Image (cartoon, rainbow over the protein chains, first blue to last red):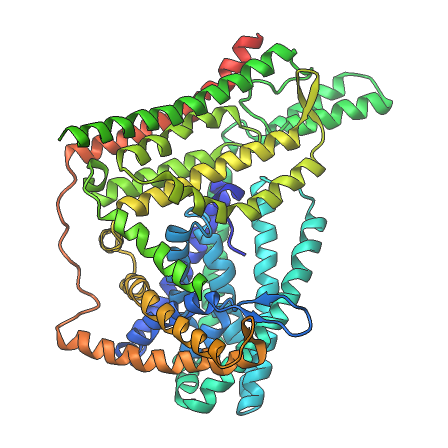
Length: 336
Length: 266
């Protein structure tokens, strides 16, 4: 579920960065007010590493012959509470992005939101705590884990769909993309939910105080703070989105181009299949603002061959420059 | 087992390179962080069919890898990890975006193919920029810089502790897995044993974390401590940042590749 930089646009990345930053700021403030803060720090640090290790442990899924691993957001929230878990997940995502190229640097906001904010700040207090409070003991924890993991994976996967489509990088239609992502993550969610339930129940049996103090740390007094955070998130998202939209629309962007394309096409009084074909091509070309070969007629063959050759040459030149520099450095070292 | 060991090795291999002594390593972390971010944002801001306009950006990873003496094979292998999801989104463009973009020697190239190529190039550029940043900057420098940028202290501490604990916990998980397999597990851990397996790891590591933290406190550790800046930004740092940002911005405003192609045709 880690999104890469290449799949998102700066506007979407920026908006999600703002939303995630707000959520992290909220969590930090929440932890600071917590009197248990001092005692929690080491446990929080180790919890991040735990998720990391958990993702490395493959287990076999009975009757399918395949294997899976745990994702961790809900597990962490159950162990150390929502706000602390969000910080731990963020740390894990930053390390995965920097050291393992798993998820991009610009996409970090999206990833923190889909895999951290959703399970830790939304699903954990609103769903997990409520279900766990209904039945005391193992039964409540197990039910809460399974339901919450499934729900947060569904929301997270939907987030991936929305963010990717909003970025306009893929031509995949919304329905097809969603139809692909949601069922896959439903299956993953069920398996991960069962495993999360088993782990939390084991820890509850061995050390009930760990699970209990996690709940206490994030007690939602009358539900006010969570409403505040949702409101804050909404305001930040809308404000950033609005600002970016204003900023973006001062450029000749895709929308203006498609409008131009439509009005241009309207002058041609042609009808029937030919017209529709031309409109389809224009619609396809409409997303290329400052682009050489975006025209009404396909350019002559020579152009595109020259263009491709030029591009290939540039790439070769870039590689060659790197090679020459490292050769020169190696030679210098040998001489020294 | 081998997977766990390998990932420990991979993570700390990058750290080994980040301790190198080239001119790139010596730059101020702020300059490197800024350049990487600026590069990624400009690359991502191109629309989905910009293949030719992106080619000049390939100079950045090539030159930086060479200057910092980072082996490109290691970074490329990591790039492959990031590939599958991009490939999936890109391949679907082939199916859904079939309008012909241009003809190449009698063969029609669709917009889908064009955007697939552009997507792959973009993924390569972004992943490389991030990896080069870590391969040339120590983790301590990055977190120090985050502190100076007033990132929340709790998050930065978390980042440092997680980074340090990962090796320890992976090692422990590896030993536990080996013990499990020796007692008759065949391929891997069975799902019904995951609860006690990871649960046991949780309990053990929480205890361990408390002991480590007590030891750290005894030596005067303070979470809110803000270490002094290693040094001020020098002219060289600014020159580096400018030499990345200015060409990036120029190639964004005047997409040379596309313009040259248009000229040749025009």
